[in-house]
Structures are given as C-alpha cells and as structure tokens.
Image 1 (cartoon, rainbow, N blue to C red):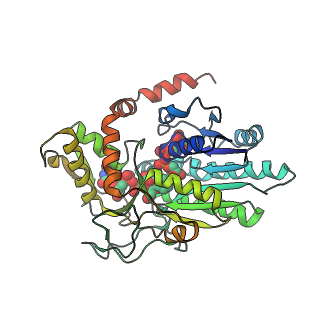
Image 2 (cartoon, rainbow, N blue to C red; image 1 turned 45 degrees about the vertical axis):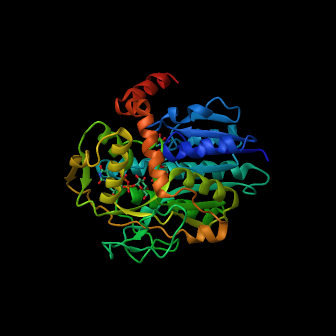
Image 3 (tube, rainbow, N blue to C red; image 1 turned 180 degrees about the vertical axis):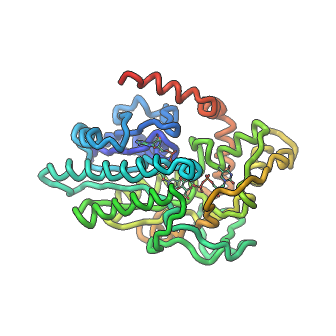
Length: 377
Ligand code: NAD
Ligand code: DAU
C-alpha cells in the first residue's frame, strides 16, 4: 500500500534508525524526514539511504506551525512518527525553555497541523496515525530497594547474562506520571497533549514510552558514546554521584523494530512501554565499557580503570528506571532480538570503527557545515 509518512527528528540517534528501517523495508512508502538539524541532528547518519527515490529530507522546525501545516498538505501525509525533541537531561537543567519550546510547543504545533489537514479530507481520520515517541522518564524514579540486585523476575532476549533487577517495582503503562527533570516534564506535557487530541478531537494517536537506548549514531553527550570516546582519548570518565543509579538499556534497532510494529499494528489510543528487562547500575555498565574498549584497542586489562572520576551528582538525578514491557510482548508479540553482551560489543566496535563520524561531531565541523549549507534557504 502506498503511504506518505512524516518522521520527525529523523537525523537524530533513534530517528535515523527508524528512517533507515522504513526506507529499506517499505519501498512503496514515501518517507519524509523532517528535522531542524540542531546540534543533535546529523545527516551523515543517513548517508546510505539519502538518494533513495522513496526518501525526502526537509529541514524545518516543528514549532513553526505554518510550515508544519504546509508540509502535511504538500506531501499528503497520512502517518506521523514523532521523534523530534530536545533529548538530553543535563541540557534541560541548564536551559529548560528550549525543552518547553520544542517538546511541548513543537508537539502541539504538529498535532494541530495534522488535525487541520486531516479534517479537510473526505475520509478525515480514517487510516491516519499520529504516533508519539516518549520516554520512561515521565514516570519518575523508582527506588533502589535491592542495591545488590536480585534475580529479575522477567526476562527477554535483550536481558544481560547478569540479569539483575534492583527493585521489585517496574514502570507499567498505568503508572502515574511523576516527572522530575525539565526534560521529563516537557515530555510528559507533550504526552498529555497527544492524548488530549485523541480524547477531544478523535485523532488516532498512539504513545510509547521506552527505556534508555544504546547503539550506533548516538550523540556523544550521552553516557555510552561519551565514555567510549573518552577512553579512546584517555580523558576522565565523569561518573555522577556514586554511580549507583540504575538504567534499563535497549539496543536502538530493537526500539526501531518495536516502532515499526506499533505504527502498523498498535491499537489507537493505547500506550505501550518498550524495554528489554536489562537493568544496570551506571558503575557496572561503565566497567563493561572500559573492559570492552581496552580489549578491542589491545590495551592490558584494567588499563583505563584509572580514568573513572567521581563528580558532583546531576541535580534531581533519578535513581532507577525499569520498564515492564510485557503488554507489548503479549499483545503485539514484540521481542527484542539482541542480548546486551552482543549489543554492547557491537556498539563499542562501531564507535571505534567510526572515529571520523565522532571527530566531525566533537570538532564542531558538521555544525558549521550545516549552518553554511542552509544559511540562504
Ligand atoms: P536526539 O537528540 O539524538 O535527536 C533529536 C532530533 O530531533 C535531532 O535530529 C534534532 O535535530 C531534532 N530536533 C530537535 N529539535 C527540533 C525541532 N524544534 N524541530 C525539528 N527537529 C528537531 O534524540 P534521540 O535520543 O534520538 O531521541 C528521539 C526521541 O526518542 C525523543 O523524543 C526522545 O525523547 C525519545 N526517547 C529517547 C530515548 C533514548 O534513550 N535516547 C529513550 C526513550 C525515548
Ligand atoms: O530513559 C530514557 C532516557 O534515557 C531518554 O528519554 C533520554 O532522552 C536519554 O538521554 C536517556 O536519559 P539518561 O539521563 O538516562 O541518559 P544519559 O546517557 O544522559 O545518562 C545515563 C546515566 O549515566 C544517568 O544515570 C546519568 C549518568 N551519567 C551520564 C553522563 C552523560 C554519568 O554518570 N556521567 C555522564 O557523563
């Protein structure tokens, strides 16, 4: 079936995996990737598909309602997968306004543009879909009731061999929202707007809340790529607080596969949590990263341990995130495919093999490049 799908934030980390998957898997779909190309957006992430006939890139800001409205019309968009956002918690602590602007106002502008366009069509919302990508951080923080870790009651193919849970409570789709950071507060607000457009106007919306993603093309301000790059350059590894905070890690391609499945088979107005039951304390995951990088670089075991540097904690640092994704497994048959040990090996290798990608970003060249390239458009 021919479809015209708007993917926002497609030049970012997760978005680029989703765009690549859709362009490759659905030659009959026209994929419109809309991205502002902030510091986090990088078209180099999409080199291999940029010339495909079923792919179009549009540089635009989702906050700009008139432009969003025009793009809906121009490309006859019938499905939206909305990933564009400011995504880094530390930046949100320094600059909350940018997060409210993009994540809240941007989502609202996109919702309204879709509503106005779809309501002009004879079939209206029939066959349409507005799929909003959100985060587990909206649920707030779980306590570390088992600091040493217990055998996790749940497992998926993504669970690590160490298979720990650090508490007995998990985030469910019904867990009450309780965001703590400006980032998660802005994401929570956007989730509420998406649901409000369903409840008020009947827009066919879906929301998913996913745990921490890792894998290729992640901007090196986030824990895993930052630490891989710092180890390579023998720079300090800034561990916030005691390194005891727990995150639940999922390989990015498994998230992209979940998005594909939910976009096509998910039930309108439903929420699905996405995660692989793969909890890690920061300090433990950092040790795995150090060990893997040292091995792949041919360094002696323990060579980079001395780079670990405990620093002042992140303000309001959420202690533990742990997603219960059994609804998605049960109702839509999703299973992650990659076990953590293999995923982290693949990820470290990718960053070490793509030093040019990393250098372009960290030197600021690509930002200047895009500024020049788009200055007069
Ligand atoms: P990212 O920061 O790597 O990419 C965000 C993209 O959005 C960039 O390409 C950026 O240029 C674009 N963008 C930012 N502001 C824009 C604007 N005003 N208009 C148009 N485009 C704009 O983010 P990511 O990690 O890939 O996250 C993507 C989405 O998934 C976000 O909504 C995030 O909240 C959500 N999410 C991320 C994770 C994770 O672990 N990274 C987990 C769960 C959910
Ligand atoms: O849970 C999903 C969320 O995961 C997404 O919604 C966010 O967009 C994404 O950025 C991520 O948020 P986190 O804050 O969990 O990710 P980050 O990589 O910034 O940090 C992971 C953990 O590591 C967190 O507990 C903070 C810690 N940390 C992070 C950095 C960058 C450090 O100890 N040192 C660091 O330098």
